[in-house]
Image (cartoon, rainbow, N blue to C red):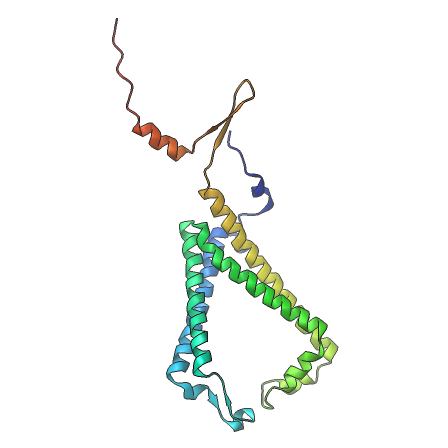
Length: 226
């Protein structure tokens, strides 16, 4: 009789599109890997040609440099770190190594906390949105249209948008966490429980260990007729 771990009742092995959480984690890791790779290419191209990210006063209403060399190097280092974390998560889900998924899961928690702080800031300081929009350049796309919207409606729209993002990010976090628990459960030693007649429980070793140990033993001697 095979015992079922109690924590398996509180999570699902399937995610969106009816695929397994392990497959979903691999797809999510590859998606993040592609995004960060594209960002890294943009940053490297900007570092090689800084003039294309320097806007004149006619474009932004003042001499403004998008990023200096120090900030560019920091952004490149962060992109490289993110590529490493996403690659570890993809490899860990593919090879069923739970420890490799932990850095990506921690990144998801950190990103969710930042978005939550943004939602709390908008809720507590609703006027900060209008102040931020006023600081944008005059020729910024849709700046005047956004300024014409009722401040209360604008706050509600932004909160609704952030709530949708938080819900989606929370679902992705649950998928990665379920994948971690699934792999961790698969890699843990599965035991068989045998109940004897005197109500004593005997824990047998895993099948692989039993097979190896059984193969290592010498066969019994042949029977000798009397």
